[in-house]
Image (cartoon, rainbow, N blue to C red; front, side):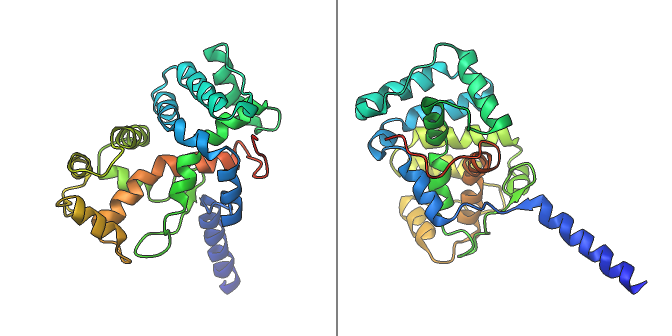
Length: 245
């Protein structure tokens, strides 16, 4: 009887471990992923990357945004020589192939697009997770950060709506200003203390121990980007040693 109880407990623990996957990207691998695409190009295409993520999430066409990104990369780094896509179906097929079978069979252009797609996720993964009140990064079996359902449940948004909301905020606000603070406060659940102004936000974000409002907001904005990073690792199976130029 005692042995049966122990075996039962081991099975429960195993199920928990299998349902919560920690990203296995090391700091060194994340650095390599950052270097995979030229920084000069990455800075130019941020709006295109955001538009791709928003429109993909909405189920809208992304060909124009993808080819806009390609044109800017080729201008910033002529040696990149990325090839524009000719149809929406071609772009869609590329993402479907990567998700189902990894990036192994894809072209240089395809691989570059995938890496530009996860730039935001890489940067967010470098936040001080596991300290100052923030949880460590851990995923459910379908790639959601483990806090996603709880956080989104407080907003009434689906995960798709949450991703769109975050990307729209990122695109709208290039500088920290009062309009940004108003937007953040409009998202916060009623049980959290609103942010007074820019100075208050900066103080609370930089504190070694984050208050509940900042912790919640950081969890919220990380859901979509960290999901894409999980997809890159577990579905696209990105080669961290690959570089565009």
